[in-house]
Amino acid sequence: MALPKNILIFEPDASGHHSGYLYHLIINFLQNDYSYKLIISVSPDFFLKHPQIIQKTLSPRVQWIKFSEKEFVEWKKPKSVFKRSVLEWDLFCQYAKKYNSVLGFFMYIDYLQLAVLTQPAPPCSISGILFRPTLVNYPANSWKERLNYWRKNITLKFFVKNKNLDSLFNLDPFATDYILKNWNTEKVKFLPDPVQVYPTTKTKSEVKTGLGINESKTVFLIFGYLDSRKGIADVMEAIGEISGEKSQKGCLLIVGPWEENERKLFDIQLLKIKQTTGFQIVVKDNFVKDEDIQQYFKVADYAFALYNKHFGMSAIMVRAAAAQKPLISSNFGLIGKIVVENELGITIDNDLKEKLEMLLNNEISIGNKEKMRAFAELNQADNYAKVILEHFKSVSR
Image 1 (cartoon, rainbow, N blue to C red):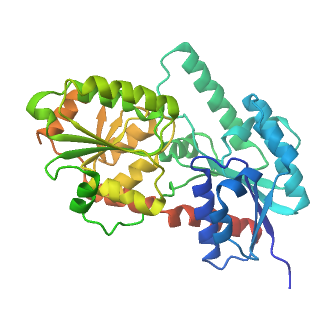
Image 2 (tube, one colour; image 1 turned 180 degrees about the vertical axis):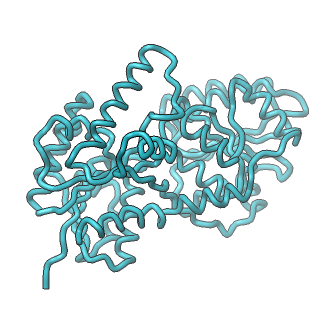
Image 3 (tube, rainbow, N blue to C red; image 1 turned 90 degrees about the vertical axis):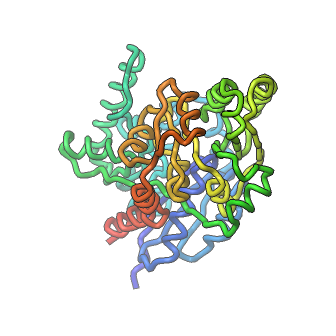
């Protein structure tokens, strides 16, 4: 009997969304009868940060390997994007050759484009996930932005045409369509954003009571890792300008772990706006397990996605859609485009205070619940995993 062929999955980063994307892929692999074997190459840091993922995916069909401490120390050193890409490329080629891989898959391939174009060829073909294309929906206003736009997209075009690239999976459906129509290639495939939504058994009233929120309040939710990208300062400023009886109707619910400096700025703003507004502000400042997340979307009437010039997708959009709660988003980039195209809520263009007042007064109805449901179903973790795993299957035949 022939030995199963090896697919090497390369993921040096243990932070942020990286672990979740990897976990959903392996779990779905183990739930199905694929004939190839997965070799998972991660940093020693991953074993420390995510031991539960290692434990849940132990199987003869999955082999976890980690970089040496020397390699990890070198990877962590500050360096340019190009130097980082070359280092990661060298590590990948070393492990791909060692484990006789038929395919190398990069969980985050954005950094690797320059290395693929300038360094020696790999021992096997490669594929990966591209998170941040800027081909469409990203206006370049300054000369610096225009220069960066052309640099990134010329590099991407050469990268897509590279003979060592088998397939490129992309979370931006509009960029995927653009490439397929204009670059004479079928290598690029749309990839759903994997979000595992665990339904909560608590009622909305129970969650409100537990958080100390009055039943009559309209709840606006900010969720996730709370840093400067989240637009918290803008929300606080808008709330501070809503006064009188109108402000008594609203509650801002902020849930998640804080970036230290952002918390200090928030506390300063909070002291100021308490003098001018009756808006209730509730903070739940801790990391939330996946199984407990959805209760906060259930209790919300609206969810914020006011990222500051954010490139790419956000799980907030999927979680809000799954809970049938409208989004209030910036009008920038992919998020703004998806919110408008799928009728997931409203976008803001220097009119946040006015939009909040209209929502508090029930002057406008936003969001299409059928389209929300369809968007949430598209971006289920199972759909994401199936696209990649079927690709592995075709390569390993």
